[in-house]
Image (cartoon, rainbow, N blue to C red):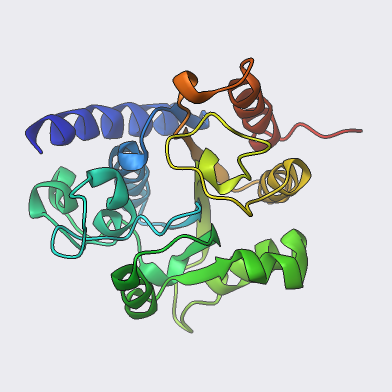
Length: 242
C-alpha cells in the first residue's frame, strides 16, 4: 500500500502538470492501479478550475472491488472504486479529497468478467455500465453516445461537463486481437470497435487525459498488442482515416 500510494502521488502530479501546461496527459503503464494517480491528477486540475469532468472506463472487469470484497487483495482490481471514494483512505484521499469524480459522471464499457460482489457494487455506485451484450445490441456508436449523454445530464443542476478522462484497459479487447495482457477474457471488443470508440471520444474535443494500461509484453505475440496500443493512442489524439 505505501508503495502504491507513493507511485500514485507521483503520477497524479505529473498528470496535473501536463494538463496545466495545455497538453493531453497520456499515461502508459502496466496494471490498472495507475489510474488511482492519473484520475486524481485530472480531478485536482478540474477542482482548481471549479469545473466538472467525466471518466470513460474501458475494461473486461469492473475494477470496483474494495479490500473487503476482493478475493485476491490485488489493488489493480480496486482503482475505479478508489476514484469514487470507496476503499482504503490512504488511496481514496490522495491529494486530500474524495471522491475524485462523481459516479453519475462515469461510464464503464466492455465489462463481461465480474466478481459477484462487483455486480452489487456497480449497481449501488451510480455509474453507467455497458456490458458486451449492450455493445452487441446498440453498437459501439450507440453506447458512446448514450454514455456521454448520461454524463452531461446526470443531474438537473449539474455543472457543464468540461473534460473527459479515458481509462483504457487493453483486456477489454478480445485476446485474439490483443493477447499481451495479464487477465484475458474472451468475447471482447474487436480491433475496429476499439478504434471507433476512441475516435468518437476524440471527436468531442473533450479528452484531456488518458490511460492505456495492462500491457504485458511477456504474453504478447510478435509485439501485436504493443503496436495496437500505439495505434489506440493515435486514435484518442484524433487521428482519422481521412
